[in-house]
Length: 253
Image (cartoon, rainbow, N blue to C red; front, top):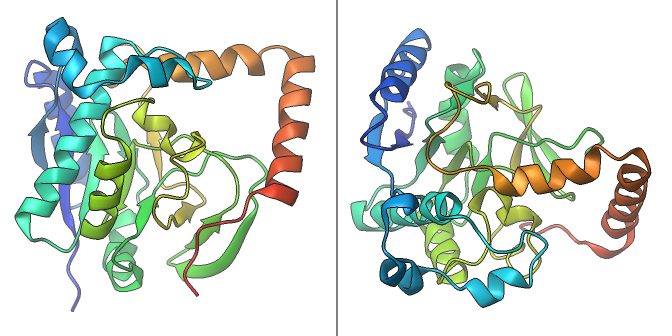
């Protein structure tokens, strides 16, 4: 019988309230997690930042120059990927400390492991309101899909060792917000991605219950576009054209 994957929760050591929330939340699902100490970019020196971050390259992306919180968040995920490689495990379910899993997740976690290929990254968030996807695979009441559209996802994802190795290589040094890795040209396509659809995780409300790992500045930039009806229409139309005629999904044959 296939067991559930090891669950890793990225959390700042100073955020005891988040640890209590996550411990209680997972307990309601009959799950347990292991906390992984996050990197706090706000506490890093300029010299430490310079070693792990490529500001010039970041400035060329739509996200622009990263905040220290975003750098710390990306560094935290990179350290988790390296820890997975060092562990010899077959894969981990990685959660940020604001993740709220759907009640049915425990019912199909074992099935997810059976479906996963080495090289897979499987986000539990697929935020597009009008998804385009290929090769659906049943996963309880949900599906595993090959997405053909950009999304923002680092709140919860299953990652395999080969995928971790590829993600590490492509994000060194850090040059984009880690939540936006599947939306970033030059990074998307590094390793096969299948997503859980409909999404099986949501972040807690922003504010006191939001993640303290890193600030979601990239999200705010994108939201500034979405708040303008005309810019939103143009953005959605351009995205549709790109996904319909230009972008090909990374998939297994």
